[in-house]
Amino acid sequence: MDRPTTGTVRVGGHDIAELPDDELSALRGRTLGFVFQQFHLTPGMAALDNVAEGLLYTGTPRRERRERAAAALERVGLGHRLTHKPNQMSGGEQQRVAVARAVVGDPPLLLADEPTGNLDSSAGAEVLEVLRDLHAAGTTIAIITHDIEIAEWCPRQVQVRDGRIVHDHGDGDGRPAEITKRVRT
Image (cartoon, rainbow, N blue to C red; front, side):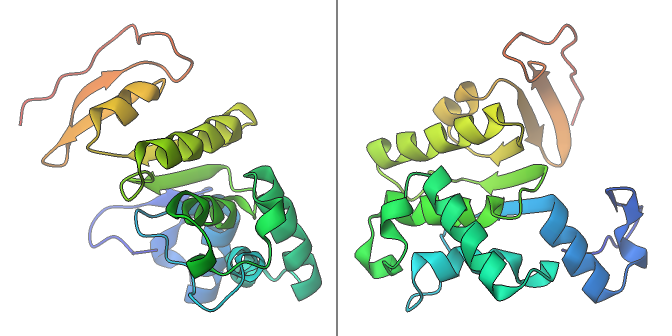
């Protein structure tokens, strides 16, 4: 997690600029999950261990990390692929492993950067369905995308241009927002 060069960033009530590296890593591990466009899986490592790695900075014992990783893989529909390595899985399966790694610590916020960008439409739809299920179960999900269809899939869309909000539509529950913000850039 980067520290701000100006201003203050608070996560869970903590000013991240004031935390030592170990506390910052632990805070990140407890509160944020990340799904990247590139899967960032370790090539020679089984899906189970790739997901368990998401708990390294939380102080969770190895056995519990692996148990929780198996449950997270089950949650994204990959309970049958625990021992498979990334090169033995499709792109959609690899992205679901990445989603499982992001949610294995049950973070309240999941950040997904172009989560379907490297997938065909079928695999992309599978990943979006997993994200929809996670959201329905209580996880807040922020998807960063340039794909209009993906944005329209989301109950709320916030359009940013040059670092400023230019459009905010929807209130997160599928209803249009009562106020649309427009900011000149």
